[in-house]
Image (tube, rainbow, N blue to C red; front, side, top):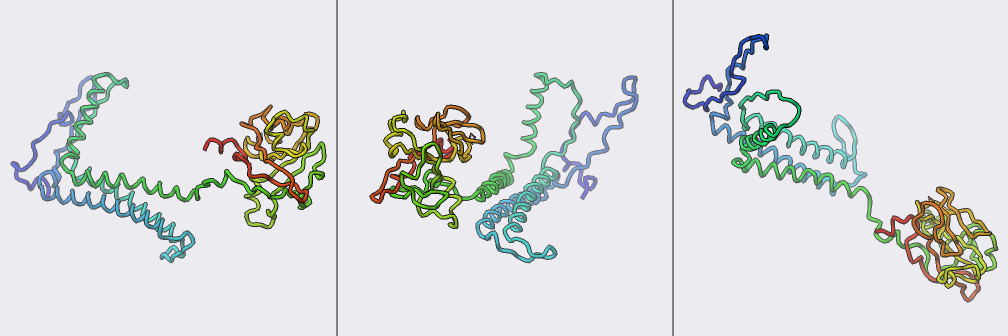
Length: 352
Ligand code: FES
């Protein structure tokens, strides 16, 4: 049905716009403005039942979007990552990827389609001219923009068409949830795993090179000796994860050279045990300077003073190396007297 078939009295009142004015050519404007063709009213403007139908269509599209978003979340929970399905003509593909892509695509498409249908059938179709102005925003322009905004809000009938407004808000609220559930793919939270190592009270110190438990006499003056906890073997599945936290270096000092009281208490006959993992970004420390008792991280040259609680004396590391309290068991082997008392490695973990 076109507006020509509608009785004149049923048509909405004509709205005059600047484009309706046909202007002729003059000196400033050499071409005459032909104006706009006669305005054709949409069926929704003149038939309330058609407007209601459009309203229901828009609401249906927003509802489809909500259902698709719920389907997205349900797929994420329901399908294991290794399940595949046959989809013609693609062939075998991951059921999880297929369902996530399909449901998210439908959710976004339905929001877009609903918004377009709403704009095309129910929002005001009055044609307006946006005349050009200087670029700077004068107070008048600002106030005009605000007026236009209020007018747009009024003409979109958001307040009157509550069904559309509510379903649209529901669809727009649910869509971001798709991104939230994907955060689960970042993996399980580390919880306290990074705060503890394989060291426990009574665990023997095992030489990393010989794989043998160590006696105090095995730690020579002037060199670094590396140790791991008893029971941690290279063929263990978790070896790399555990040694990355538990790697230990031992140095023998003269007890008189140890300035830090706690360090002295936690040592045995001048043997001090420190985490080998640099507190900057976690490189293994490997250089020792016997005269000064400094150890150096080769990555960014952080330097720690082992005679003074392994405090940082140079470089970007944020704090001292954690010390492991050690002693000797009844058989004369070096043993740990507990775990590290603070997280090993980069200072980041201290802030958690
Ligand atoms: S990792 Fe050791 S100084 Fe950067």
